[in-house]
Image (cartoon, rainbow, N blue to C red):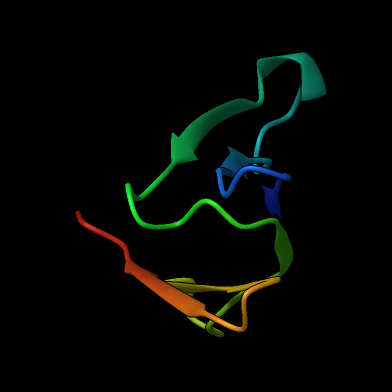
Length: 65
């Protein structure tokens, strides 16, 4: 699950856990992304995350294994 905030940060949670209290998250940022994140989406295989901001930018992150 990925949620964006008002200053361009994206919080990505691993929710594939048995106990919700064990869910962990990472914060994804970019120095040029500072507009509010309005929408996020993963590709079907979960390898790419897209985010749309208020300034009409589309940001793309690829999973590193």
